Image (cartoon, rainbow, N blue to C red):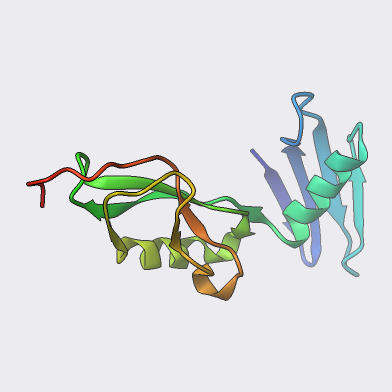
Length: 134
């Protein structure tokens, strides 16, 4: 969870680092010129996490898509890498229109290069074909 305080162009954010189990309590300040000051990290990975979370937040998208001829109506999928956070809603809209046909294996590419990010959406589980299921 992040707590933001913003005055004009200045930003102050408190957040918990999620890179490792330590869970450092980070504080990031951005002055009016855009310069970042990060405190509270115990390793460089925490510092990089905080910087990326402010300047370029990204998330791995996990969701489901429709699947035909399978025992279940939905197939769990995920992106192979984190995508820009601002693209999550649009990516969900695109994936809501996707329908695949069983059989599918874990790791199969369901949608290549989603939203021209260079990142693929892959199946998160095997799904066998079931005869007589529409």
